[in-house]
Image (cartoon, rainbow, N blue to C red; front, side):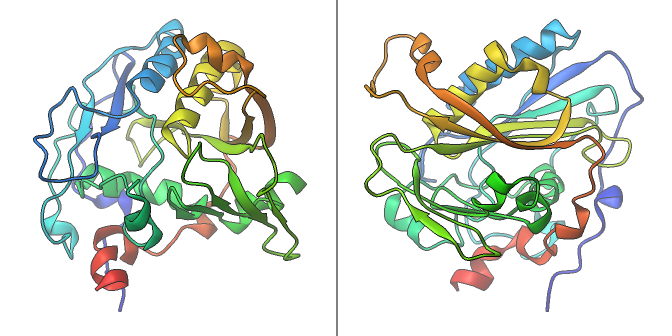
Amino acid sequence: MGLKLKPPSTRSVKTTPAGPKSCHGFLYAIGEHIERDFQPFRMRDLGALADLQSVLFDRGYRPGANFLNYPYVGIPPAKFEDLVQVNVSELGRGSMLVWPTRPPMHDRINPAMREYKKEILRSYTTLEVQLFPVFSEHFHECSRVAIRLGPRTADLSTATADRSVMDLYQHGGAGYKTILNARTRASRSFESVQRRPSPAFLIYREEAWPDGPSLLASFGVGGRETAVWNYLLAKRYRELIGKYAFVMAELTPPEVEERQPFSTAYYDKFEVAILGTAPIGTDFSGDRLADDWLVAPTMREMG
């Protein structure tokens, strides 16, 4: 029997009246081991956040406090009341949450994540659970191992439909291993492809919850892809930011790859293809997953 969570609009979220525009990063900790002494300066994708904020600052936003997600220690909570409480009183209609990391929606559910040790550890905060339903409208699986698009998102274009299920390599970048059209069952393997493309995504909501902040999320599947995508967004495609509810792109690395480039100018060598877009106001809510996975998927799926 699924958990009966309150709808997002009533989940103990405090808001403030609209004021000066502020943008707030939503950041996850680096590392896979909860025994580490996590610190505020050990956060993922700070470069990607800076690239996104550079665009927002040009649009009149000012820096706001970042929200830091530390790994939850112990058995994940089984109900909303047991989540880590986060004070979001500074988030209102004049502010924006900026999420520069692949959301770890299913990292602990997919057993392959434990094998590859590429899991992003969830924080199980009230704010994280508040925002995950937005991502579940687009992703019915979202992990470093695999991405599975919701039906409405997959139907945005022929290209997105052909990539409605994506299995990804774990080493040498997050390139496609196979892609599958869930309707036609047509598939393609990238085993013999030298320059393996990788997906990237841009999501925007004018209200993350009623009368709440806007939400901007931009990420690739892996850390390198997230860095490349957001660098190129800020440099070449800034008109996409905040103008579409959903964008799916594809990144193709250069013929000669640099594993440790000495400048982010290397990212300019990546090719970008925009595969599908959805205008603001497009309704994806019919594909939203039920709430019962939000709180304790590990207890149900892995216990």
